[in-house]
Amino acid sequence: MADIIRLLPDSVANQIAAGEVIQRPASAVKELLENSVDAGASLIRLVVKDAGRTLIQVIDNGKGMSETDARMSFERHATSKIRNADDLFNIRTKGFRGEALASIGAIAQVELRTKQHGEALGTLLVVEGSEVKTQEPCNCAEGTSFSVKNLFYNVPARRNFLKTDAVELRHIIEEFQRVALPHHNIGFSLHHNNTELFNLAPCNLRQRIAQIFGSNYNERVVPVEEETSIVKIKGFIGKPEFARRTRGEQYFFINERFIRNAYLHHAVQMAYEELLPQDSFPSYFILMEVEPKSIDINIHPTKTEVKFEDEKFIYSILRSAVKRSLGKYNISPTLDFEQETSFNVPPLPKDKTIHAPVISVNPNYNPFAKEELDKIPSSKEFLKSKFAEKYFSPQTAQGTGEKEFGQHVEKGLEEGAEQKKKNHQLHGRYILSHIKSGFMIIDQHAAHERILYERFSDMLEKQKAHSQQLLFPQHITFNQSDFELAKELLSEMRALGFDIEEFGKSTFIVQGVPAIVPENNARQLLENLMEQYKQNLTGLKFEKRESLARAMAQHTAIRPGKTLSEQEMDALVDELFACKMPYSSPSGNPTLITFSLEDLEKRFKK
Ligand code: ADP
Ligand code: MG
Image (cartoon, rainbow, N blue to C red):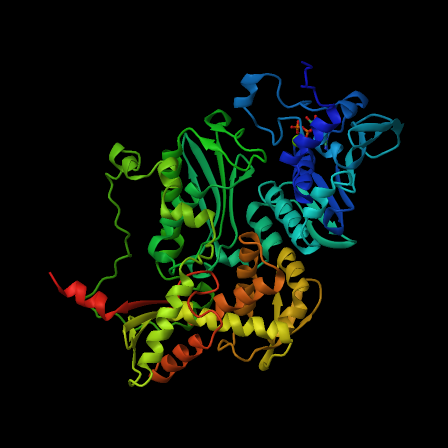
């Protein structure tokens, strides 16, 4: 019988491998930026057209490449960064696999211009679908410039898979920020379609955070610092009062590489413990330095996941560092020293002396004692926990049994109609409601979320909404990535009742908010809305309107803890049952649970 196994040609092998590394324009951006950092550049410019579909260009003033290296750089497994297997455990550069350029060259038209310092001439190389089209000497600046044109031009499936420009651009901005944050000593700029989105001069970490996320971050964060033989930690964490209801800016870097890590995230969250309102998330920008050999970064194609040798230690050190910093800067009520003169301090009784407030510490507490470490779950145990589940998967709608359940309730309601309706509020969160066959408990937040969601969806469809004018128009400035995203949403926001206009480079002016929203803090409303919207975008894949309606409902629904009057409860229950889908919130949580009299009877019998 004939043999049928064949080796694939390089160009095909490269294309297949490219799928792992380059999933979207933002992945190419990440690889190119990281190469420039590895080349020792002090200035890196990123130019993008059409969210990276037509052009991604990265220009650096790094060390450049020789003619031969320029040619070699596009070969698979060609790297200047490691030489043997041992080097894999001592990685100090961003790259090391030598596959990014081979991948990009396989699925785009790439122009490389590069010149080493002190050389008279540089090299121009044009690569298209893994084939070298041109290689010749050229006049160019010292350093390297990569132009990646028409990404996925030969992989239509990939090209079609790309999301809208707004979404792809947001991914690019996100990657840009992940590289720019830890490398604050390097100057970065980002242009999109001839608009300058960022121009970041070299500075310190705190300034870089403010450059990227807005100058108000300066007062929103406090430093965290810790040095041990295992890990060095530096960075900034958000003050609890600025925590957001949805995940905000959360950045971990290991040896200046951005990583995702639910386990370490948990350590930070635990340090905040009671300081945070329920279901809110702190911002953090934490840089950790460890011995390269104590981690493995070779476990994930995009190197955003890392395995630690001493994970429990790191967990514990991180948690106590964050705790300490919160204690130092935050637990005691903050005094604003500039305004202190206006304080009216009552005179002290004569026989009293003042003691400085002390935070009690147990001097014998050793976070590394075995008993203490035993209390910390390993990352493996942790991954099985509820917390991890929540971190990784946004809630998915659960449809099972809903219909049957619904009929049951409706029947109950009908039967109960003649009975005098009476609702009671429980613990400021639930409404206990009689139905003839027993009773039901309604989650007030989930129920209101459902009601609002249906109304907002309706408004978006009919493009008719009432807006309530603000007494004082508000100027709201976003960071660039949010601004770009918000711009795409303007017509939808107007359909919801926002009276909003673009006003300058990254600012909106808001003159009115949706009339059905009880809140009049337009800034908070918009900020939370964007935050929620971003969450919805990354988590579940909804279209724009759907995402926005969900975000509005999630944010504006009455919170648990709000006391409701009898009329309010009646209205809520009525409106809930006027909904198309009353039995679950838009995020899929049940809005109510019923108990039948039979259930009760059973519980009271032995
Ligand atoms: P890796 O970064 O894993 O080594 P790449 O495919 O990204 O693999 O790059 C291959 C090689 O090309 C690098 O090892 C480096 O020597 C060279 N190179 C890539 N980009 C640049 C740049 N901007 N400046 C100088 N050299 C570069
Ligand atoms: Mg690389």
